[in-house]
Length: 213
Image (cartoon, rainbow, N blue to C red; front, side, top):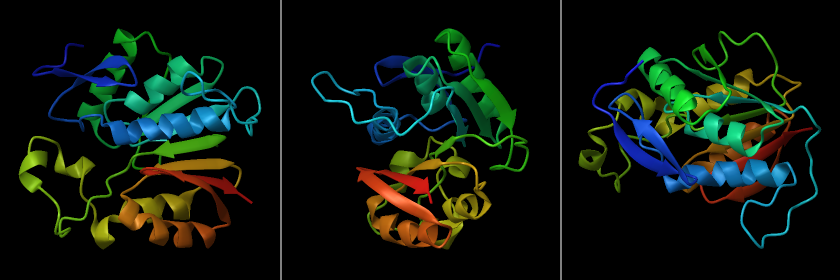
C-alpha cells in the first residue's frame, strides 16, 4: 500500500513514514526504547554499561496504540530474538505502521484493537505511548499540534483516562509495563499503578517502567 501525503521523520536512527493519521515520532519516545533495552540487559548507547537483564529469552512485547509503528518496529530491529506485536484503534494508523514495517524490514504482527479489547494473548511486556495530553494545560501550544490527529493526542481526566484504563486492564501475567506520559502526570500514574500491584522500577524522562509484583 502506498500511503498518500507522507513525510519522513527520524526515530532512533531510522527513517519513518508519517501522515496526517499518526503522530510525528518524537525524541521523548526514544526513551521508551532505551528503557526496554536496559531491561533486556543491552547497552542503548556506545560506552554505556548494560544492566543485568530482567528479561527471559523469547520475550513477547505488545505496543499498544502503535501509531506510525515507530516503537514496535524499532524494538523488532533492536531485539531480533523477541516476538513483537502492535495494535491501534485507527485503521489508517495501522496502514502507516504496516508500510513502515515493510520499508524497514521489521517483523511485527499488527492488530486492530481498542487498547487490549481484541488481544487474545498475554505479552511479557507492554509498551504504550497513548494519548496523554490535557487540552487545558496552560503551556499547551495547540497550533503546533494542529496537523496531528486529535485522537492520538488528547484524552479525558486531565490526560490520564486511557493510561488509567490500560492499567486497569493489564493482565496479571504481563511482567513489565513501559509507559510514556508528561512528567507532570507521573505521580498520579505511579499511585494508580501501585493500586494494581505495579512497582516502579525507574523513570527516564517521559518514560515510566513498572514491574508486576
